[in-house]
Image (cartoon, rainbow, N blue to C red):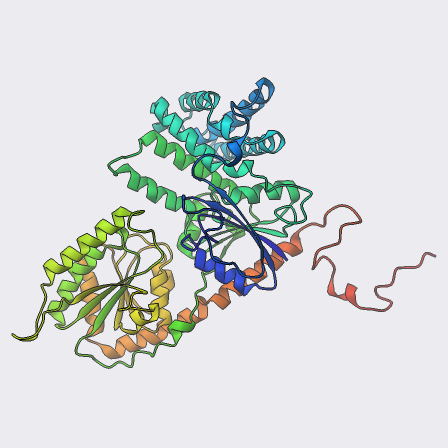
Amino acid sequence: MRIALLTEGGYPYPRGDSYAWCDRLVRGLDGHDFEIHALGREEWHRDGAWPAPPENVRRVRTAPLWGPAPGGGGRPSGYGRRLGRRFGEHFADLARAVCAGAYGAGAEGAAGGDGGAAAEADRFADGLHGLADLAREHGGLAAALRSEQTVRLLEGACRAPGALRAARSATPADLLMVAEQLERALRPLSLDWYGAGETRGLAAADVCHAVGAGPAALPGLLARRLFGTPLLVTEYGVRLREHYLASAAHAVAPDAVSAPVRALLASLHGNLAREAYRRAEIVTSGNLHARRWQERCGADRGRLRTVYPGMDASELTGIEEDRGRARPDPVLVWVGRTGPARDLIGLLHAFAEVRRAVPGTRLLIAERPGGPAPDEDPGSARYLAHCRALAAQLFPDEAAGLLSVGENPVCFARIGDPALPRLADAYAAADIVVLSSVVEGFPVPLVEAMLAGRATVSTDVGAVCEVIGGTGLVVPPRNPRALAEACTALLRDPARRARLGAAARARAQELFTAEQNVAAFRGIYLELLSQRPLPAGPAVAPPAFARPPEARLPGRWTAPARKS
């Protein structure tokens, strides 16, 4: 089977989103051929900036969503008069839908409630596919999308009845910024990935698998429309949710983006997600929390599946289980990427209460590698520095005696450094693993702790309750006292801690291993391929599963019928 894997800022880039999951999927399905069609979001997502892929990856094609459009993006000044009118009609439909809101509910509301929302969704789809046809027939869209005509059409859509209230106050500078972001988001429409005569690529793919319902799904939407290729959309972090969170962060940043720009871009991504959900044969999510987001954004409940992300459990399941023995210096362990959403400040205040209740307790904060470099994400670096300063203030270095050297009970380490060479070393040192986040999607550190057989204390965010399933303690977020009380209760009851760790390991091995994930997608691929209609023409060989098994038996059952 030939699978076109469509990613945005992810695989095959080693620091991209969902890299580990995609790599395990490709390697686990080594009997299938994969072609990677990757959209780069950052400047370091350059062509060739990835390790050697597995042998069953036949080709990697990339396109940047940053910087100028590749190849100039079409004609220098847009289209001529006739094609300009055609472009204006299609872009006006798209702009009207975007300015009306992600669900077709503008300031005055879309007439007819759900019917109005459906009409706006159809308008967006008509504009999107009309622009795609124009790009395929007459060159790229980049110049036209950055032209004065685009800005005028956007301004008219913002002033039209039913437009979002925030969009009505958009300034020319706001419209120029929106036009630039529109061009980048719609750049996949102008790519040369859709040649019908190709023996490889999207034209020859049996299934298009989009990792996310954003721009990565656009090539799959076009392949479905042009070639009838089934589209599968998988989201472990809902792309639209991530955009909303980033937009909220931009609203309070020193160089804050204006409200009209945020509203229009949120509507654009909402419409893209809605169209991907509408057209995909199957939409999978990594947990029920993400699934509720998808339903709210327009996904049909009948097409939704929950497939938990698989993890390599071999290293973690080799850790010895907690035997329920009390230690004089118990250790709390936190693992993850640092940032305000992880609420390490709240964790440090909770640890201060734990130390008062259980003297001698230590805290290990293990930073996971693979995130942006400090110069690429200065906010996380500043947050980590603030946490270090707070730890030094709350816990002055303690010495056992007058002649011994003091030591802080909070240790900051980075996995992969000599002091903490492996991820398994962090979990092996833990008596309790703590997750203190205030925002979380699928809690990967929590699953890792479960596979390691460790009792956990987590905040009730994202999919935590679904993942933990009663095998750990869950407390409200932003509540250091509750977090401290839960940790103290487990530290004082080693037998309960051991029971919870054993139950957590059994649950994780049943639901969250890579083998479970690969088997689920193998079945989904076969299901999509078996439902795909046969292409027209006698010279086209039918794909696998197009004939029933008994048709392959030799003898009179498969002999051609004689004419009487």
